[in-house]
Length: 274
Image (cartoon, rainbow, N blue to C red):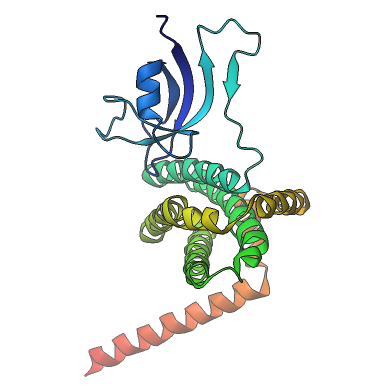
């Protein structure tokens, strides 16, 4: 009996994966392939033993499968998730995770300019993904389907607000040529936790409620939202800092900070005199 050999292109879905096994290719015999593709979603695959650098079984996303023994012209089977809006949102998380890896590298190297560019790209990415597509398109579709979803929506929205709070604080410090490690690491950790929560919990619940027609409408609306989205231009940090420091809000913040420092100085002097 001829044994089929499958050539698989995959991507690891572990939120913290940054090793050489994050993306790659596998060659699996048919029996092993069938054993590892035991998820209900057949676009997912359990990682073979010894592949993951962390030493655990991980969830791999199958991007392409080819049966090397097939003689047909169309012997390449492509796992196409372009028509599933929830899978699109899950795949977009990989872009965010790659930006977080880059941000962590810039923090370690104290690369302010690199951080500025990466953080601005991250802000554009999560604004489109989280605010425009999720809160603007997906959430309204879910507001009347059940109490479990309603509770989840509140949690996800609160996560979004917290992430943007960290993001804006971190950017404000970069304008002053400072790297706030605590806020930077909190931003990265919170986003990774949030992505894991959405991928492994929230979207599973969402899939339970959405019909095929719902997904079809959702896909159309998401595409329209993406086409109309205008990202913020990522400009040079020094140029942005000059513009910001001429802004009335920035000047007011500076005066407020100066007043606080003056009050601290007065308190120190008063304590010294007594």
